[in-house]
Image (cartoon, rainbow, N blue to C red; front, side, top):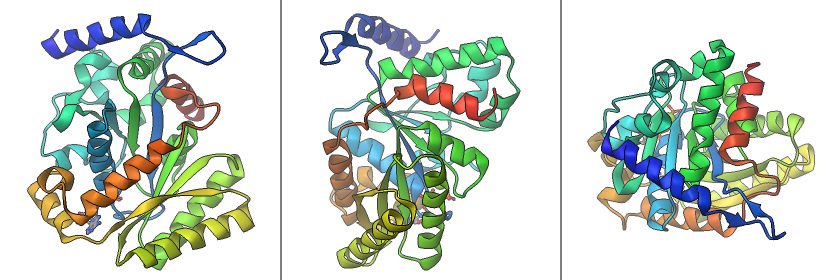
Length: 297
Ligand SMILES: Nc1ncnc2c1ncn2[C@@H]1O[C@H](COP(=O)(O)OP(=O)(O)OP(=O)(O)O)[C@@H](O)[C@H]1O
Ligand SMILES: [Mg+2]
């Protein structure tokens, strides 16, 4: 086992005795906040939001891990410019544990590439599943926040990641097709759970007014027609730095922490964590159990 794995194991052992008080006098086990980042339409900025939000949260002192579960092209690693040694497949099929398969990103962030591992989950036998669930559940002890970057669209798989997480960050741009697809996604969620916390983020907006208008319009329509309240969590203005940094394979908030997009993402991070986790949040353990039940495992 490598040094990093050994270190993580020690953190877990320490955390076992380091429990939070749930308020009732009974110590409640520590839970990570599980946030799925998604969109109706593709290419709206989910992966950039995930990576840079992770950095902003890390700078706020939170321990952050990213799970990349895009079924098509995993691209968290591309934006970090880091080639991971392991993916979720190694966790599923080999004798690797969660300590070993996490890759180091910048600023203490860790990430796990899903690869084709996500699809494999459906085919696991009971023993493999138990191992997998046990490993993912350990993330509650190691991290404060789990950000899950999904592919776009309304597929069954993406919906499973949305419904299994305690919170959703829904990214849209001002393009009409992106807005209508975001609404379609909210509609699908509302059929299953009208209390789901969906936080709306407008990316690539021309100005603050445009961003505000879109977020307000989406919230009003969702509340009126779907009885689901959206939370407005902020906006990121269109910023050329983002495109330049994508080409350099470096997160924009690392290259230029003062650029417009970095300042916006910082505000979003603060707003997200100004709100407490929703009541009944289940953390990593609840997330993985729900997810596997949706997959019919
Ligand atoms: N605020 C912004 N300003 C300017 N360009 C942006 C901004 N956000 C994202 N982009 C551009 O949009 C492109 C797509 O972003 P990103 O890969 O993060 O989207 P995605 O939603 O993850 O896409 P996919 O659905 O394919 O996973 C980026 O390559 C970048 O050039
Ligand atoms: Mg992406």
